[in-house]
Length: 419
Image (cartoon, rainbow, N blue to C red; front, side, top):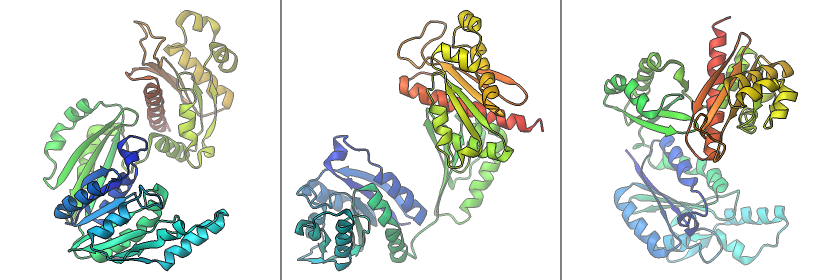
């Protein structure tokens, strides 16, 4: 099996100025191609660090993919370091890349300087990977039986080039690539430890060829990832394992295809030809934003009332004032009234409502920070459920919204049984 290291280059990564999204993208694409990623590194803009990285990675891996350090300024030293490392005695100008540079500057109405043209200069030891989205080309080096690929660090440029990299890898390593299969199983509502206990027997019975990983996320639940490397028939092994798991977890599994909760809810609503409205207090419009971020949301999403103040709950959602006075806004009675009010006002098939205490203040012994009430009104009934989370304000809001979406998902599934 072909093994690869990935390295992202730039001081900005090491000081936390930017988040490294390139490595995750590259790792995913390499796995799809049949290349196993065994290490990921980040190093600064220093020749010594890059040189050491090249030495160590090329002793352990067949392929090294680098991003960053290819611009026109003095701190962009990757190209020169690779030239020295691979024994290049001169640079040559890529006419194809120079043409792209000229086109880019003309379209932007900017003056083209020689320093910009020089970005088309590459070591004679490399093959150019044309970059049509930016000025710095990618470079492919065949070096002592190993391959070094150097790509620009700007994410959209790197991603635009990568299909060419994939083609080159498939051609160069054609007889050595192996199937790599990953299957995610997204669950919600079961904590990681409880999930591990619930599926312990299933996990023990997994074939030795399959690897299982638990990937908890406070806002999207726990993903289980089944992986199979270099095994013919791996897809069938994973499919059988999932079929054995479904009866154990039931509706706790919301996706087998990397869909988000909002995508799954949208697909269910479209399938049922149903509509939904939202009434939000503590989530501040987060649920509405998650639902409307999905393409085609206009087919099922009608609207929202952001009822943060009690007066808005009373006037727009018809929550009785004496109810709010007696129980407060964070209670089952309030969210049920909010959901029913939203369902009535918008004429929706479903409505979901939230009220809670996101923090950091406002909690009490009876209703601590992290308390959430969610209600879902369906064509048949209205139910409420209480949740208690721990986290800072922003994390709590995200978790509140996710819990509400999952309760809506389960309510839609339950409603279909009445038909």
